[in-house]
Length: 475
Image (cartoon, rainbow, N blue to C red; front, side, top):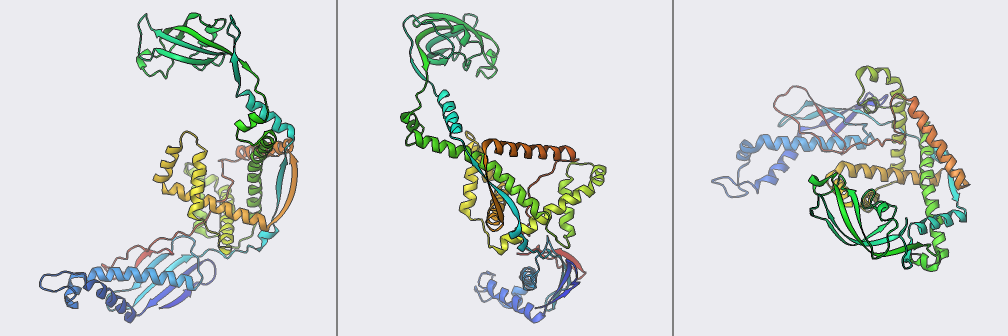
């Protein structure tokens, strides 16, 4: 194989590849050796079919398969040996090919630009640590206690009031007739919350244990029997018990019920939880700060095809006139995205950053945990949508890159209070809102990863000897 690089200046290059007919014939001979033992033809024993017969029967298919293999192998080798990374799909132009002929073709390729990543170590960013006042943890614990009230038996002849826990049996009728689902046993209601039927609780205020009362309420929109929706029902209620709420004692026992060792341990866990909540939001700001610094990196030439692809994405859904009027703005945004993607990819490759299957599965599980009650739906979504999983892989890959950049870059540790963290986050949200309002179309702020996709070469056609243009991709 002989390789010649033409148009060496700039990113657009022509790679001319020549494979002599002797080499091509050796590939074809090898292929016939592979298939001869598998071919069954009437009148011949397996492995004894003459080459001429095989050629008449399978010659065209054998040549096409060999041509595909040679094009794929030699094009990948030509690009790798000359350290050319394609920015997208190269185009393949077949010059000469055929049985007992030399193979010659040209790859027209736009190369990814050379990226200088040493400047990454000079990036400056803020690394926030939120100091949580112990009072914040106490406040959070008190809120938890309020939402987990205890109840004690009410005194004799006590009249039920709001916040009391009432236990009752009931039977219901509509127009004096029973209906499906009209009975309830040992039903518990916390009066005032209206969790059963709207207006139901208020009609039990003042009732005593052992008393009965008829309560009227309208059946809701989500009632199983659609014919009874919005109809007024009468509920004959028998009060079995009334309990008064009592304040939960915040002590070691309370803490153990929440999974902590003791009350002090619970306070530490809650403080960490509050800190993590703010840290996650502040880490996103740090990430944004690093990406903004990477946007300023200088790249002499940006591949035109990547630029056009990115502009198309940015202008999706817009009219042709609007897209044209906003092109200049889109070009600036697209250039920044591409620069960030190229720099992150180069940094990832230089540092041999990979995403393991375990890391990918951990991210899937993380997404599932974020949707409580819909776990099966989320799992089915990722199982049926490989592109969604691929997107998650890109997210994990980018996060690993950014975490390593944070280790290598210059960080300024800043210990801040909860109030200062809230102000920083509020100011950031206001800035994003202003940017949204001032732009003609909302843009994403995170970097888009630029990838060189690896896919097999398309099968070359051999029906005519005219010049053909084919696409080939790096594999």
